[in-house]
Image (cartoon, rainbow, N blue to C red; front, top):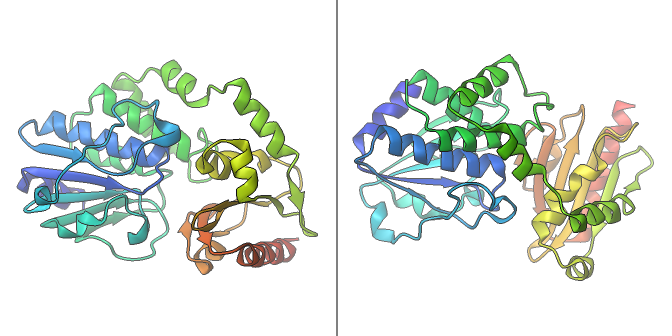
Length: 313
């Protein structure tokens, strides 16, 4: 399959790289990484990256997206990265490209592109792209290696999550050989100012538990406004405050947003993905998300998670 993808890449002079909106480290890492791999190996091709801004990950190298016109999609190849559903893609103009390709590691939900590699055995899309580069004997410049490594460590929880394998470490080693400075990656990624530490303390005190020990936090729109930080920081950024609590196998962070209630679901040992899918979301077995339209529906989701926890006891 990688050979088929490389052959398609060789056919097109213009390539536009997409990923999911509200990007995390894996989405941006794979997008930036692939951009620089293609620029290094095919210097005559036009390579563009599109999507919303980097938000929490604006510290990463070369994260400024290209502002391109619709006409550039004519005769172009569009590549979609780290995205399990059409509605999540950062820019829907990919549909007007001459040909489309997807690299993804989420649980398969729907066919999106003309040619797809979807492999849930990879801890990250960045890991999948690193394998692609290795198997196709593509040069990986230092900026691409750093970006891909950043995505690997964020989506593997610093190599802690179940999808982490011997292959993960072999690919990480390969990237390090291309010139990754570990201190610059970790210092930028995990440095936290005092306000951030205080915010974690606030959210730790907001943790509640169901009768079957599902941990959850619910933050109203009014509270979001009072806190004065973006919803990504509150929703995805604070879900980790409930991780590693003894006796808690499932936890979920609810945050009121313009579209309704953003739900970040996590588990240490159970497949919570079907619950996310039931409510219009998706993701991985132990890390999924969804956005529902009301608090009432969010509480129905919580009840489903509570029932799952009861069946596991």
